Length: 213
Image (cartoon, rainbow, N blue to C red; front, side):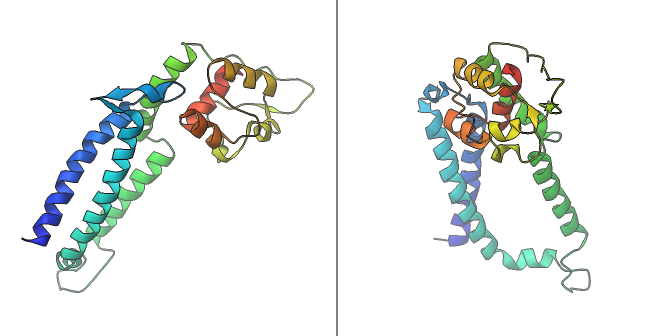
């Protein structure tokens, strides 16, 4: 029995399994009523739980794999003279790729923005029955701005009541309209809480507010 080979093969098989669960969790619908969705006889929440559990096992396997291969990895950080140089060309490129992936995902930049939008659009078409966003009406006596098409920074931690302090939002109308399409959204809940309660993405909640505003 070779622990190093077992670790490497485990990491490989878990990686393949993660690829499968990633596809199904990506394709799974979001929003009210989506909990009944199944694929291959497995419910959406089971797919998500499986994806999370496999991710933890994969993380452990990768850590063990790194420990077994610490010498070859350390060699990647040495220059041609054998001296350790952490920020060499290869390491710098790896950092740039990693930061690009993280930043692009967080700020919905290409190509991750298109991937995120496609998933959210699938849910939005079913939830809002193809309704176009209503035009935002502003009160000329107030200096509030209309709700912007793109979510403001750190909006997920804010409530509708808080946003209404800056933007022109008809709280009673928005609450009633969201409830009519199956989204429970008390004005004092944050967008994150609304998303979690209704099994949605926070961005989809924001877009729903725009559509009913």
